[in-house]
Image (cartoon, rainbow over all chains, first blue to last red):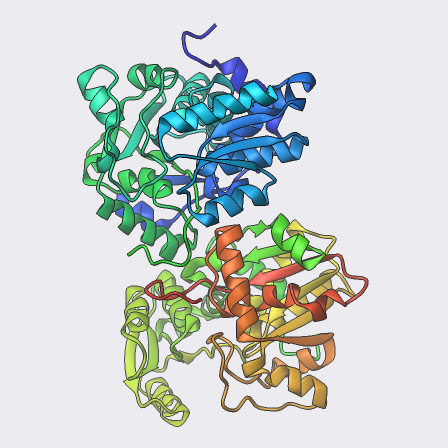
Length: 318
Length: 318
């Protein structure tokens, strides 16, 4: 039994549970990015995952794990990001309703994406209090199960399957760099990777405009993210009660990068790798290319997760 | 001995010659594009090839096939497109000079790309006559070997390796759609694919603003492309003396698509597949999504080549 929210057994179960439903995404390399980083980089392409983000792993694991009786009542979440789309699709694939609470102010394109996956949207005021209140009302009314975006054992276990596949394809990695928003991806990947390969070094990646995990690590205690300000709009939130302990104990260090570094890395990936990554999705790669990471010794073969690729194609990011 | 410029034996030799030098590119799928086309589509991602285009295959095959004595004198071409970069890199990898003749008017970014691969640029007037004259002068002065962009047996054989890999990954294809500019890619792929799988149906894809191959097929005789006008700037040229006979005899039909269809397909590939394809690179996919192609019967599993991904990221294409 792990002292953390999820253990290796639950990640192995998740791997079997979601096989054939989520994409087994490819690992790509780039000589240009290797040269710029001074290391050998192996990019796990979760931007090519269904729904365009790793979030589909955790949502699928959580939805498939429900008993038939519970599942029939549907699932609920409040999110305007990739988790909302991921949960809507995971529910649609299982044939159950997904109730998605979104702020009135959410862009039309995000609402359309959720509806495209069959999600049933309830609009609310753009405050955390009203989002939670509306979600709780839906739970009370429908009996549906709340699946939060990251602070949930089944969601964390699902995200951990990313590292299982990465190490299956590239077993001799020295380290993995993972971006940190709520921390579901890094918590799951850390437990998975260090179970497969004890001692594997895990580094977190945050935008300097939403650096709560870096500050928390430095302070040795959980600190919230207030007033985030970054182009990486998938990484604005604070870490959670379940994810923070893993980051605190098992992640070696959290590096931060500026929006300028995120933007230029994103462009480099589009230009040289011909892969579309969103700003949040480029944060781990930006760390891999940073002077601070270059200074880390003993690290040669590095896994880097492209966490998502959902961008607005009607604007230029540079 | 084939009646065409290259035969199956030369394509098999090319496959061995370039193995480990060119990327073996992945084949990707998309449920969204399958649904829109009504077929199962398998996209061969030459946009992920080195230099960002299939051109690196033909250039590498031609450069590697030269004897040591000939190679030492270097190679020459006149091009401002992907072939120029491909030949420059193929020569650099072999450690020989590449003399690239480019019109003075070529964009700075294209010159920089060629120089980035070690190409030695000679500028000329922006006329075909001066390009050929300048290239011939370089040949006379240096003894270097002219490697044209498509109408050359070794270049055609190299491009054919694309279909060898595609059929190796997806052996039960009914058809392949290939874009047509000079015709090197479709000629090589047709000979390769029909050697591996006699009777496999090959369809060409052209922009309606540069439809010389479609008009030639319809007329039953070679016609030149005059005054091309399309966003697909890699497909402006006429077919060649070596490529046209293969298209004439072995390609079932050439479909044309409008710039509007090319642009919307390109956007769809960026948005849903998270892959950057250039306008020319999206032409075969645009055919796959067209009503005219949907009407073709007996075709279920279709290979589609994404020929390249070199775009200008400082502009929006839609």
